[in-house]
Figure: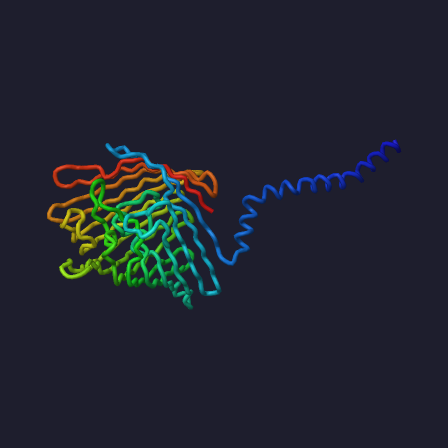
Length: 378
C-alpha cells in the first residue's frame, strides 16, 4: 500500500512538468495559427493610419446576340484613413488593367481624397478635397449598378467642400444631414455611353470636354427606431449645378440643372426595403436619349429589397430612367442577386441583369446577363 501511494505521489509530481512541456510544444503551433489573420490585424493596428483594400474579379456572361463573355479585374483598391485629434485625412486610389470608362485619363485614378476637421459642438465634419456628393440614398448595395449610376447621379465624386453629420436625439431618433459645394466635377464617375452601338455619353463629363461646375447639394434624413429590430428613414435632398458645354465659338450654351430627391428605407430585422426618387429639370447631356435631342425633364427611381440569412444576402433591385423629349423614352432595369459571405475577407456575388429600353416603335435590350463576382477585401 505504501509503495502504491509513493508511485501516485511521484506521478502527481511529474504531471505539472509534463503539462508544462506539452504547452510549450503547442505554443509554436498556436503562434502559427495566429500568424495569418491575427498577426495581420496586429500589424494594421501598429500602423499610424487605418489601411483597407480589396479587388473585384468579374465574369460577365451575356445573353444577347453578338455579345461575348468576358472575365476581368474590375478594379483593385486601397484606402488610407488617418486621424489626428480633430483632424483627419482619407485617400482611396483605384487600379485596373484598362480605363474604367472611355473618358478616364488613366487606368489608375483617385476615387476620393480629402482632409477633414471635426467642427466643435457636434456641428459635423468639414471635408475639403474630392468626395462623393450626397443626393438621396447613397447606393443600392449592388455590384453591377443601376440607371441613376449609369447617368452619373450616384457614386459621383466632385471637388470642393462638404459638411456632414449624424446627430442622435435620444435612443430612438437620429438625423443625418449634409451641405456641400463643389467647384467642379471629379471626372471619375461611372456613367456610361448610351448602349450597344450608341456612343453618346449619358452624363456631362462623358465627352472629356464638358464639365459640371458650381455644384450645390443639401440633404436631411431622420431615422426613427421603433424597436431594436425596426427602423424607418425618410429623407429629402436637392442639387443645383451648371452643365458647362462651352468649348469655344459656336458651341451650345450651358444649362442649369436642378435635381430634387425623396428617399425612404425600412429595416425590419434581417429585411430592408428602400426607394429613392429623383426629379431632374434641365439637360446634363446634349445627345441622350436621342442624338441632338436631350431630355429637359428626367425621372429616376432606385428601389429594392434585401434579406439576410446566415452567410447569404438575397436582393432584388429595380431602377427606372424616364426621359421626357418630344417622344418619351423609358429604361427599366431589374436585378435579382445573391451574395455569400464565405469568409470575412471573401464574398461571392451572383447578379442577373435584365435591362430594357422602350424607344418609339419597339423595345430593345440594353443588357441581359449573368454576372459572377469574387470580392476579396481586408
